[in-house]
Length: 102
Image (cartoon, rainbow, N blue to C red):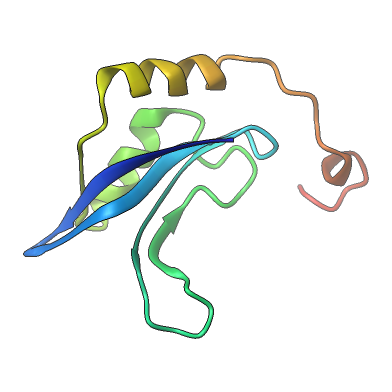
């Protein structure tokens, strides 16, 4: 799994510790940002938690935009690394093979 630190904006608020990455077992790009104060430390925005939910980097960024967030600070080299990681053929996970993940 790859994780790259980015800046995430929403209105006047900024999260300089947000992350974007690729999760090979789920075969999806993901984005997390704006930690909440709840007991679980859940992020305010957490995209890419389902199997093949965002197969493209553009898809996860556009989904964030639809919710009012803007991604900044994703370097060109990081984008290339993310796309290269997503370009591999990943075998279904054991959970998938057993039918736990559909």
